[in-house]
Image 1 (cartoon, protein in one colour):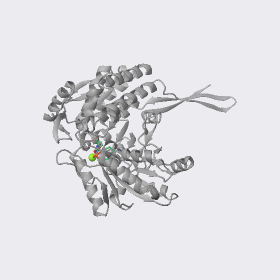
Image 2: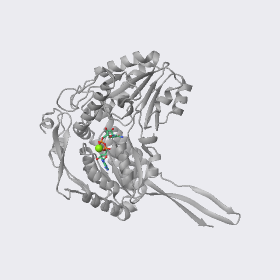
Image 3: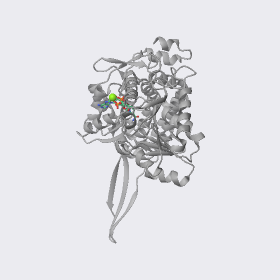
Image 4: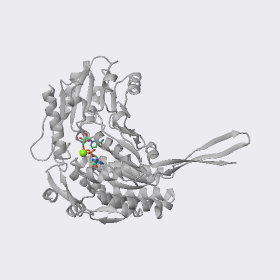
Length: 499
Ligand code: NAI
Ligand code: MG
C-alpha cells in the first residue's frame, strides 16, 4: 500500500477503496465470504499487496446463484420492460464514464497496465460496450414463420427469444473491467441474471463496478459478484446445477474443464480462449504502416491479449526491414510501472506470468532462437519483461507453437506466398490473424482461407462492440459482441397456433 500512497496522482476514492477490505456482492448486499477467508491482490509493479478481498468458494457461489435465480424468476427484473432494462444499462455506462479516472487507476494498479492506456482504451471501451448493449435490450426479436401445411391447414407460427436464465460468467485478468462488460452487457440486455467471478489477480475494478450497478438501480440479485480462485469459486460456478449457461474467457486448458463441469446439468457454454495468431506481411505491403502495427499487434497490453499477433510471417524480401523495424520499435518501448507518466509498457500481471514467459524465452533459446530485441526480465522488482523479437525460429519450437501471453513475437520469413496460409493455419488455435498487402484480391483471398474468427487486413487489434469476436478450433465456442453474442443469452421458443 506504500506505493499507492506515494503515487503522485492517486485518486482519493482509489486509495480509500484499496485500503478497505473488499467484500462480495450477493443479492444487493456486500458480504464477507461464508468461510470468513480473504485473499490478497498484488500490485504487479512492486509485488506488494494492494488489497484484501473476500475469498468466495462453493457456498458463496451457491448463495449468489440462489439470489440470481430469485431475481430472474420473480421480482422487478423479471417484469421490467426491455426499454427500462436498456435505460439501466445506459445509466451504468454513464456512471462508469463519470468515474473513468478511478477505474483507470484501479486497472493500472491491479493489472499493471499503463494508466494512460487504461484511460483511453479499457474504460472508454467499457462505456461504449455498455451503451451498445443498452440499445439491444429493445431489439431482441423473433421471426414469423409461414406455416401452411395444406390450404385448410394453416398456422400462425412465430419465434420468441427469451432470456436463458441464470448465467455464470468467469473472466480473466488481462482486461478486467472490459471483460466484465463483454459479459454483463449482453446478459443484461437479454434479461438474464448473472453471477460474475472476476480473476483472482484483478478483482478490484469488478467490485467497484458492483457499487455502480447498485447506484444505477439494478434490482438486487440481478448481478452478483463473487471474487475467488478458479479452482474453487470458478469450478463451483461452472458445475452449479442451477446455472443455465456459463460464459468463460481464459485459457484453453480451463475451457476444457468448464465443458466437463457443465455436463452435470448440460448448461450451455460459450468459450473465448487462447490464440497464437499469425500476422502475415507480404512484400507488396505498405511497410511503413505494417511495421509499427505489427509491433503493437504483439506488444499492446504487454502481449497479454488472446488475439496478440505473436507469429509474424514476413515475405522474404521484406523480412530484414520488418524485423529491424519491429525490433527498433521494441527497443524504444519504455518499460515502467503503470503510474509512471513515461510508461509505454507495464509489468506482467503476476509472478506466475513472469515465470511462464521467461520460461518460454529460455526454452526458445535452448532450441536455437535468437533475440534481436529484448529477451529477458527487466529489473528485479515487479514482473517486467522486455519486449522481445525472436528470429531463427521454426514451426517445431515451443515458442512458435504455444501461447506465451507475453511481449514476445517470433518472426519467420516465407518465400512461397501460396504456402503461407497453410503455415499460418498450422496451429490448434484460430482466434485472429493479420494480413498486410496492397493487392486487394490477395488480401481477401488470404482472409478467405485463414481459419480464424477475426481477420484484420492492413490493420490489427481493431475492436468494436458491433464486430463479433471469437475463435475457430481450440480458441473457443461461440462469439462475443455484435448481435451474435445475444444468441448465447437467449433461448428460442417456437409458438405454433392453429388458425
Ligand atoms: P485461467 O484460464 O486459469 O483463468 C481465467 C479465469 O478462469 C480466472 O477467473 C480463473 O479464476 C478461472 N479459472 C481457473 N481455473 C478454473 C476452473 N477450474 N474452473 C473455473 N474457472 C477457473 O488463466 P490463467 O491461469 O490466469 O492464465 C494462464 C494462461 O491462460 C495465460 O498464460 C494465457 O495463455 C491464457 N489466458 C488467456 C486469456 C484470454 O483472454 N483468452 C486470458 C487469461 C489467460
Ligand atoms: Mg490458471
